Length: 101
Image 1 (tube, one colour):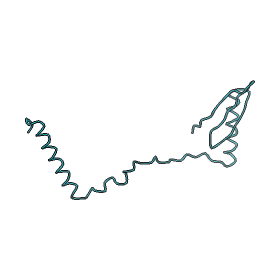
Image 2 (cartoon, rainbow, N blue to C red):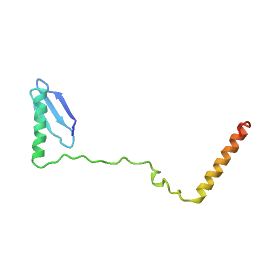
Image 3 (cartoon, helix red, strand yellow):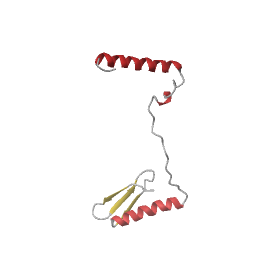
Image 4 (cartoon, rainbow, N blue to C red):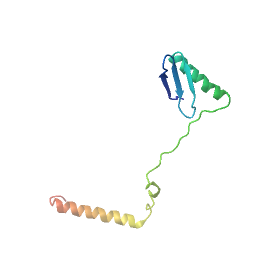
């Protein structure tokens, strides 16, 4: 697992490494690597005390019409409507281009 963190220099000298939520942990060190090492240690301490790092798969909201997909699949009027639309298109195409069959 990879986690994001913020590393920033402190006024004067040293660095601060901050872990993002849900950790809300802050560690400081004389160097960038020291600050990261201290932050890692804080996280490892929490995990060894019983905390757990987990990920959740939250589904993205679907299209609002998705629940209606396929609801007319077995409706006999739908097939009749499709045939009428196809015939109407053929007639429209024939009128637009009389040279077409």
